[in-house]
Length: 150
Image (tube, rainbow, N blue to C red; front, side, top):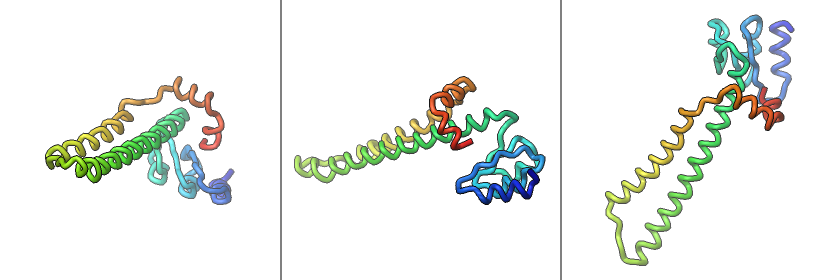
């Protein structure tokens, strides 16, 4: 397709649309897409949301990392919600009923501990780099997910 035909095709598709371009005549289509992805080239990279290396496996790795990040966000939100609800119950109900008080320093340390657990959980993503074998296994286990995204 020509560049204009690719752009027209992208705009006619239902959102969200991911366009992977190789810089030849994809700049306009990458700009029209909801998510523009390019290989590591200079002219198209300025128009892309994501710039990959020289392999299509990098796109699958990026999708895998995005999925892991979304799972991590949900874990952190769940943890923080449960923790804060339980601590509010402790402070508002249990401590007044037992006529005890919690020193502000301890309360601050408890809240800092909660924040520390959330940060440490998020930092687990830094250690996880999906290998090509893990990516291939992930595609085999859930091919519909990647067909929909790629």
